[in-house]
Length: 430
Image (cartoon, rainbow, N blue to C red; front, side, top):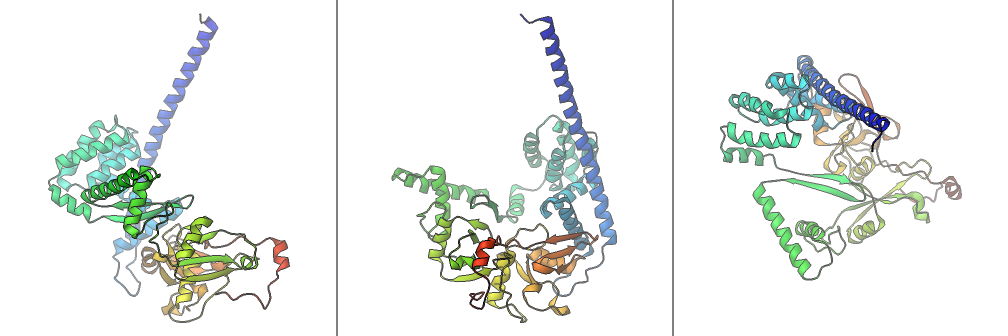
């Protein structure tokens, strides 16, 4: 039997737990109210940015409208200050604009804590894609159930209602969606990466079917790999035109391999892993496979004391091939704050514009992806290079952010440096 004391303790604990859960729910409602206020502030910030934005004063290339300049400046400002991607900053702007202008009833419900910001974002995201005359009906029907549904359930409802309330045909919607197809890579730990391929469903199903067919055939022939591994390797082989002898490394790869080497490695001191341009450190086994199949090499040495890259290139109007490659190896990615687009997909930009007297040498060159190259020339963002290839960016609102190149080997141990002091016999940079 449960004693009176035990029952009393159980009842007290139950009441305490109920109070904690109620407090959590109330805290969540307060978070929703804060998100609503943030959305309103983002909308006001956008209006102010439009009011204050100057006309595009850049030279060369298509001009940007005041709206383009204002929205890009605000998106980059928010991204850097909030430590989010620019895509996330643009989503915040888009949702804030939608809530403040077209979906005000949803904003009011969010302000009352009836559901989360993610719920509101779904309503705006799906509703904004509808014709204006269908948005009110869509919002009303979504709000009827939004407070009782999870985010996943609400998104499923939005997909169904989108089909019911809009006047566009399925063909028209497909053609619009297909125009936004894309392919992207996201790096993962342990020498791996994710590839995202957004494409028409018919093609996706056909590719999946082919991968399954190849995987099942290999499995029936006695291949020891799992079906999941076989499907992944089948897609790689189809794209790269080879047959994988090493899991995850297709024989069809014929890369241009850039090997970053600490200078003392040439003297037998192995202190750093190989680096795959556009990714980062990779394991020795994979590096050896790539080196064995590479048609050429670019050798780059690093200073054993500071860890900095040694070569600086030559002064000329356009970077020569060696200087161009060296800039990409030094910086690895676009040097705009928080951008991770690989340097190989970026432009080699003069930090101090060549047209304004900037020279073409290593201390005035850095990769900028096409998007941020345009931001540099069309908006009020400014940049200068400091010592050791550090770039100092100043935003339109005066916020200063410094970015450093990722390629810096660990300095060699002092005892090894003492054994091999720099001298006239040191190997050349290339």
